[in-house]
Length: 493
Image (cartoon, rainbow, N blue to C red; front, side):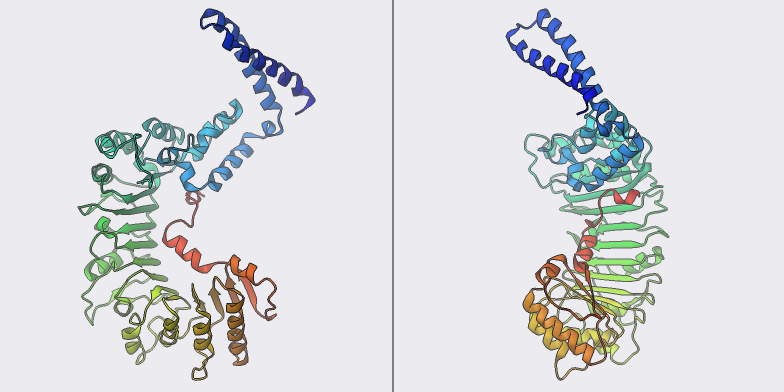
């Protein structure tokens, strides 16, 4: 505290001490006459104290940037307080109530209010507040079913009955949505979902870039939304039951399809997706989202596809790889991978040239120690791989496959290996593999390790020519797949 602010602080404290004695004064005009002048003087002096502090001298542009950093640093759920009743205020509201100066800066920072949560149990006045204070700024509209119990705050019946009020509030703002997220179990809230989908259906979303529609426990399929178009939509995540007829989406670059509660899509639908999304670069399939039959002559062209990711219990891996034509494919993920996944594809690949000539990165997650023999099959299917990611290595099996006496150096072009959860015993096996490849003239150049593995092996002496990068490649994939890798504000910048 500066010398200049000390008198204001001392006087304000005296008023506070005097006000504490007002409890002995009866209610009425006498109490008000004593309290109001003291209250006004306290507020004025505290304002002067706030203005005299170092942060009070910050230009509004700098203070606004600090607010933005604070918002981006908070976990996403902290920005949605009415979905988490124990949180009394959201951070933007708190910032706007620190001082008059902070309030002025906060109210003139529309990005601060651009994440608008409409999840039950909601507070409609808060939703209106965010929509108003975000002004014309692009917004993220979030509807998620919270994991906490509704309790007495807002029962599913009340939420369903008041859904039309919510929809009337948000409908005028759909045109400025840059991101829309609808997630959760709607078993008790399907009328709410229906009401929201009805306002989505006839509208145009000219600024929409990210759309997430991952819902469970619904009885009907929603066949279309934004029928007037979403011309710049680039990222789309859907559960099958939300699978609409996709119009031409020339800007779509990332598509994630999950099985959810519904039945998988057939090859005709997959072909329609490929035809509609000619710029698609990343296709992620979760569980048996694409089902047969798989005609031997079928081919589906993805001319721009660079990453194909297969997660969960997808039983048609070989069939999918046979059907998909992706000349630019660079990255393949199969997690988990089991014995039957590549056998049928391997039989065809053994008698023909590599189907994916640009494939350089592969991620495989064997489900057991015995599953590491699949690496040999994968190496014959995709011989030009340069980077291999293995989420979990069983040290002995890993070592035996890579250094077995009956095995030549497979993946001769392999330059980078990404692994995680490596303890000291696993590091010994890893060093043996590194030495084996170096002696065979096929050295590894880079090892990617998660931070825990780096800490456990900080004293390990590694070859000088080997670059060790502290980065968890597998966790990055998982976070991207589950849509948690980005702070919910990153898409605005």
